Length: 114
Length: 114
Image (cartoon, rainbow over all chains, first blue to last red):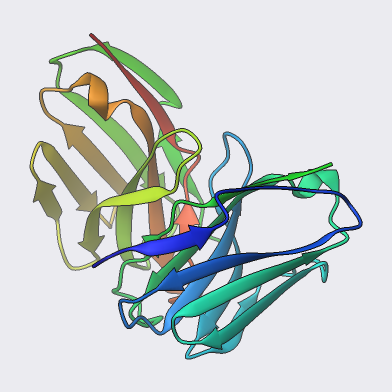
């Protein structure tokens, strides 16, 4: 099973709301990633977790708060977002962060901030 | 800093044609190069992964080559079908930016006309 699942598929939220995105994989992967993708642009890396520890934060604003409760689950907590944060949020995983491994991507959560 | 360029940005061809998508990168120090497919509003599907020591990979009607010294990769699609219509993204994993990052090109939007 090479599947990464993400919920919800779509999310609409106001600028004062608090919401969370969820990502799950059951491939035994120990590295998980959050990417942000704007329309007609490539994905941009936001965060990397390796063995449940945050290893990369690409200078993401604090209104995005990642969490890795266990090796299968990755959350992205959202608070006080701006309309320009509307995008497709993609989760990915890989066996480890070793250079030779591929990343498997989920279907994404399409977020609209009003 | 590694930069990835994909040419052309968009391509429209009749069904049945063989076609080539191009990807170039500025720094040859990479762990691997990966080709992805993305359907509108969906996640990324990995098509082919070429390790830095390899020259090409094949999967069905797809063949990807890698010339690390010249910083180029091509994705060859044989006997194209309407179902191949999608955006194709090339991504490299640079050695100098850590094994955890993928650097993406802007993508080639491919349309196969019946």
